[in-house]
Amino acid sequence: MLHCLRIGVKSTRVVLGNILIKAVPPIIFGLVLFSIWELLVQFGDIKPYILPSLRAVLRTMVDPKWRWLDQMWVTAIEVLGGYVMAASIGIALGVVITWTRLAQGILPFLVIVNSLPKIAMAPLFIIWLGYGIVPNIIIAFISAFFPVVINTATGIINIDPDFVNFARALGTPQWKIFLKIRLPNALPHIWAGLKISTSLAVIGALVGEFIAATRGLASSILHAQASLATHAIFAALVWIALLGLGLYAVVCILQKVLTPWAD
Image (cartoon, rainbow, N blue to C red; front, side, top):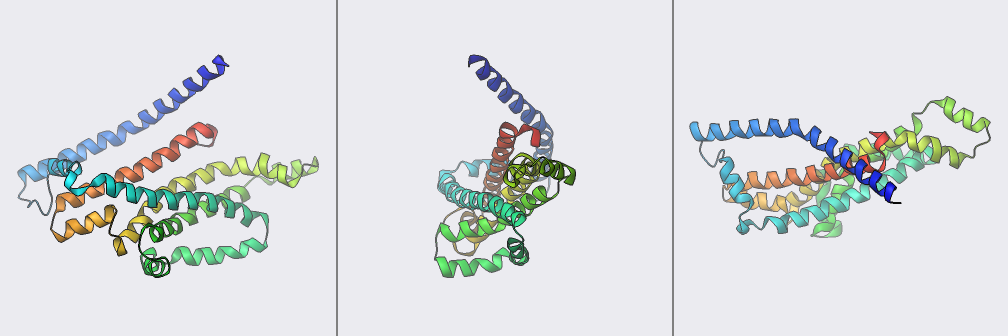
């Protein structure tokens, strides 16, 4: 028991170490970008309401007047709610589509819905569901849903037929072929869809907030715009980026821990 625990701790350390190594180049690029930004502000003739200094943005990010944590919490609930729905329903529907021909008739409808601009659909959900976080969760769900469905279905279908035929020749039941062959083959595709959907869920939630919300990070951006507080807009953008990056990192860590071979 103790030996297994040590192996688990060691593997977790290896995973975290690999993540840190991969994070070094983006960190270096970010430092270079921020240095150029600060130099432009300090030595260029740029008005603060056009491009604020990095220090002003960082100060605004911790300014209690803007209540960033409260706004972040609202947006995070919307993003997570929509993302969890998109992940669970998307994977389930992707499986169903490949399981029965009748369910494949849903695909054209999904393509049509996905092609519609989410900002054009937002007023409908506000009329149907009222104001609050629920319409924003639904918009986040619709925005993040399609990649999960398509990637799941693609991963299950795109498999070497020889594996399936060999299993059938041995008399393996259809459900066992799915669990032992098709699903493991689909996992890399499913994880890819889940990663793509992280940013789409954030975008969807913000679209809903921009339309009618009185709380959330998008609402803070609108308030900052009204007073030409460009530094606050940049601060909100940084918080949004951190939210999206955090969700993406969680999905990557889950993939590394649960299915390290499916990377």
